[in-house]
Image (cartoon, rainbow, N blue to C red; front, top):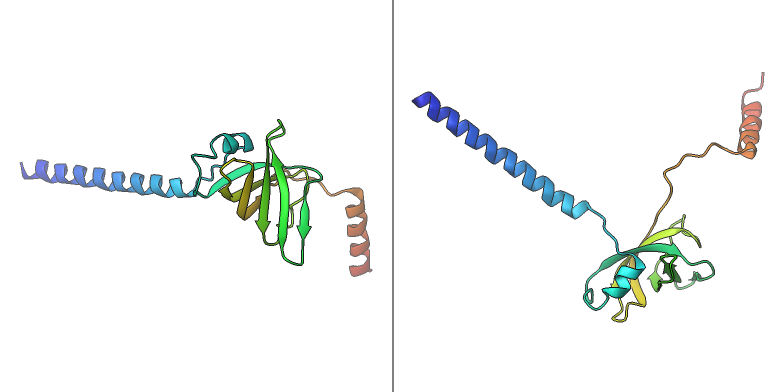
Length: 151
């Protein structure tokens, strides 16, 4: 009887520990998941998103970037490429990969009409593809090798 009771306590203890690990994992995962709205979703839900910091992802509209380096003001338009556009006002230096036609995710407060966002964070989406160096890069590599490793 004592052995059965001890086994029951071990099983219950194991279940509690596994449950705690699962609960902590789910809570941590919830904080790390990066969800963003499309420009269309953000525009449609703007009234319910008031006062909340949201993330909106889209493509930087070609010809819309206005960068004023002296006061670190960056203004541009993001689009879902289906006609919905949102004007972005960002304060700070843009990331190195930021350019027209690239994908971005902005974090900030949306206006009540859903037509603009005051951004406090700007993230650039980039490709995970590896591309082989071009012929020019191979030429540079050969010249460097010849200059460093002379026989």
